[in-house]
Length: 307
Image 1: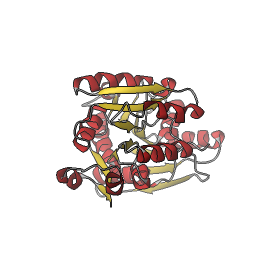
Image 2 (image 1 turned 60 degrees about the vertical axis):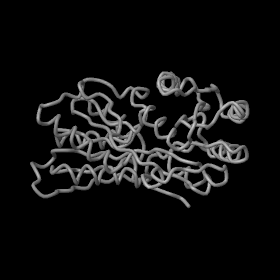
Image 3 (image 1 turned 60 degrees about the horizontal axis):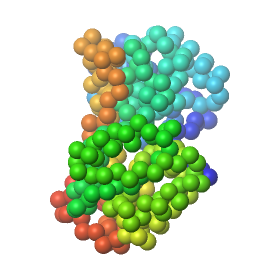
């Protein structure tokens, strides 16, 4: 079964120089993209729009040896900062550009991938659980129980945080741990009748093409609101999702970069920060199918509405 993950390497490596107005000296910032993907492009657009520095762009491709050669080329330009867009780029910077300050964006679960240290920091794609649950409570009046299927090896820390947050909000989490993709359908069936909604977390074991179809069909058949991990899933039929605003993630990255280069902030102090702006997407056809009336102000606040 295919895991729904966009972080695959491209087959071509390119370097492009971008010089916005009021550029500083050449080689100021090296931008490494894991792949030429639209979300990454949006994040870069936000960064370059906000930061008036000379930027050398690189998009990863090829095998490990070619990536190492690219890292060597970047090191020789002596940039004052590396902006790594995506996990693969962030890991390359961490491993092969140790002496250059690295700021990552568009990365989920950086701690899991050891993207920590005195010379690396960034903005994660992980939206705080309390932000998610507060939004979901506005969507589903009387929301009291939320079911989630997860792999403890991947998402155990997230579920522990979710339990603590849910308790403060008067919500109970019904969490079922699985160790393989085969266990997901049974785990989902087991919570039906016990939960008011189902929450899909971005867990590599749980989120596959097949499992999403099963989540979608099962929740629709049983009239259960389904909160997904991406607006792509909402377009396909999930009720709702919260996603980072990718362009603003780039702008937020620029603000951190300026703080680092001006000496106002160290990477160790910055650590991993959540996105400051998130977008809500809704599927009103799904809401109608499950008999859910979403308040008009919530619909008006959504970035994407599928009708």
